[in-house]
Length: 505
Ligand code: NAP
Image (cartoon, rainbow, N blue to C red; front, side, top):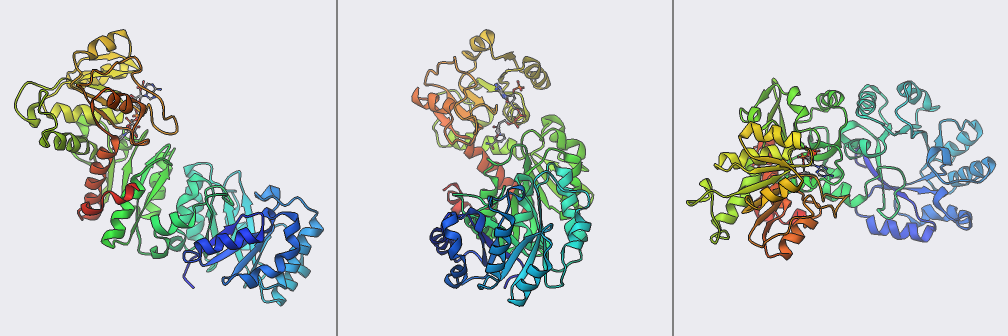
């Protein structure tokens, strides 16, 4: 058995469908949990035969509504089910903290099963959690378990501190919800006896990953005490493709590292957490690119001019901040020019001889700062259009560019600055795909249109541009090139370019 097991929670309504689910993931999992509360009542009479049909250790659980389950029968029926399971070959019986029944416990142990003693809290990380976990086990063979849902980064930090302080050798500690993702992936490193997962069709608890994600994307089976941790911080973060890019690189190059999406709403607590976990490097996305700067010990000299930081690398002195968005943005643009795809239109400074490219940047947030800085480096002073005119003005003043709000004046000005249009707002990004930052602009077909949004691959804005005959650059191109630069900073190794298309599948 590995140090930390991967346990598939079975959420089917029938025992047959649960057996099918086991077959599907058999190679990836170490044990299963039969959640009797998900079963149709008519199936409960057959639970005794279930362990004999599985070639894996099985946990038996009957979860009540208040603990996040679906069992609505009488208390005596729940105890009866637990008691029946104990004599039927289940290896573990999960009993909640408040179910104190010495006779039942004795019966379970006498039948050779072990007790998992569990606490569930969906409202947060309770203040006295460490003490409650210590008091959970009534017998040295019992395994204490706490599944709690951190409501913010500070609570996640407290949960990780409890992980570190608990001397119990066998324990199951889980942070539920999106904030708790790292506890599920890092279970082997943090010392949790198991990590639960469930089928994507029906998750057993909030924040469950499925076995494919845990094994193929995060390489759960290779995580150990020496695995280096990297990640991307932001809010929201669920949509990020960066874990696919970075983890694929580690896999191909055989690097013992994992890269996680980390939801962060409080940087102060997060950096304390990052110190405890010794996180080595971080990508930074919206809305944190500006606010991380005050936490840096050292920074790339360009950061002062850009005012946005998308990369943090841990150094002896603290966090070193830099920005790979600038080069990441320019690379696909340069590639297009080098490929002579722009031969029929004016080219700018660095892109070749000829008159200056006239460009528009829509947006004035963190990404726009990098784009305007990059274009400025190429001798281009783009028109900056933004919903909030004051933000457009402030960015424009920094680089000496024209600016406007997205209004009649903005629409009139863009006609003059339309060789290249860069869309750098979050409009059109999932889950609000379909939004259009410039709905009244009619493409002529001569513009080169670059949208930084990478999910969906083709935004409504890019689709309109393409339909009008424009050349387009989807945001994934920039995402890839800025991530490859980060990969080099994080690992000291070149990203394995030959396999770059794989992570996009
Ligand atoms: P940010 O700092 O939060 O800025 C958001 C920008 O979007 C601001 O200009 C904001 O205008 C504008 N905006 C937001 N909602 C709007 C709405 N409903 N209507 C009009 N404008 C709206 O975010 P960011 O870091 O610049 O990121 C922006 C986008 O670029 C995100 O989708 C991000 O994923 C993408 N990005 C992609 C890459 C890549 O590698 N492809 C790299 C970086 C960023 P106001 O000032 O008026 O609020």
